[in-house]
Length: 552
Image (tube, rainbow, N blue to C red; front, side, top):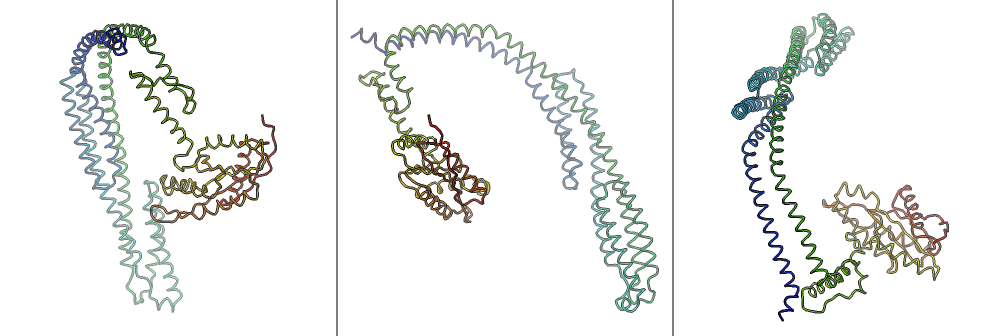
């Protein structure tokens, strides 16, 4: 009894466990010692270096935020967005000054004076740009209001009366000239909105002055006996407003030019600030790298010792494995391993050691159950999980069996290649979930249109394939048209309730599987499918005659 217990699996494993505890205990003690030394070094390293790294990162991040906000200062274009941007720049500069003060306490060697000078210069320059941008925004609004007012004044200018236009040809001619000049002045106003620099504005103003003189001359020669309101006074006021518009536009470009110059100076200051912060960050990380190398160097001996213990443990456990596991109960484990390593369905010749009450027998019974489940999973693997029809791999397996069968009974076979039309557009317009639904409904519809002896499978993507044994071309075409019509008649509704039309193109070919390969027949059917696509889709096309090739 005692001898049986001594040589039992439990006793052997208990011995291995005891020896493992001893080795692991020694290794744990060494690891604890090494970890304690590493912890002390790391704590010293963190206390001295980590605060500087955090400060350097904050300084670097603040400098880049200042750079981004200064760019936004000229992109806002509205008063509501201009002031918050300036306030944020001022807040970032305050943060920068606090960080520089903190750096002074941690690292007195950095050039804090230069950083503070650059910070103050950025603050002043940003204030100046903010003021000019504010003027520019207000001036732009004034230009828009005045330009709209001048347009209304030009449109509402009084002209000659209707009766005088009918009676006197000279009056009608002056009336037409006034309208022509008003149109020219309106076009000048429209062009003024698109002017981008002073040179273009000067050219436009020169052209305006030429038309202005002609317009004033026409107004001066207006009929003094007209019953309409004299247009001279209103015309003079409108022309003065246009002159004022040109002056305001000129002032707008001058301010914009000044802002551009100040922005260049501001960008230069921000670049200097970024350079300073990058230099400091690089210095801190260089020191970090140096300290880290020192810590790593101190821990090398501990790592060497731990590695030596690991090598010894591996060697010792290998000896135990050879003596106890392989020589003791390894054979039964090998049988279980070979059985688990075979494909489901190919393990009928393996007799698992299920007899007995020990742990290995329990393991063998569990392995037997797993193999049964694996066989069932293999059966599930023959079906396409989305469409619940045969998958491509199983189709070729069944097609190979059909080839062997028809070698003994040469009968014609029809192959169909089916493809859902515009399926990518369905996915793009209604989503992949709806596309999956279309695939499933289409597959089930096609499956109901074929015979039980026909092989219907999903070939890939939105393509399906049908192998119809003992079928000629005429019968195959009837089935193809039945499939096409059934798919076209499906009632597919999108999530919004809209009906989605689904159609299918089909390529078919008749072949003798005893004389040609399945791949060759599929290729010809695919060519027919391509022609169906080219000829407008939602149709059936028949492939040409397949050249007989010698089959190995």
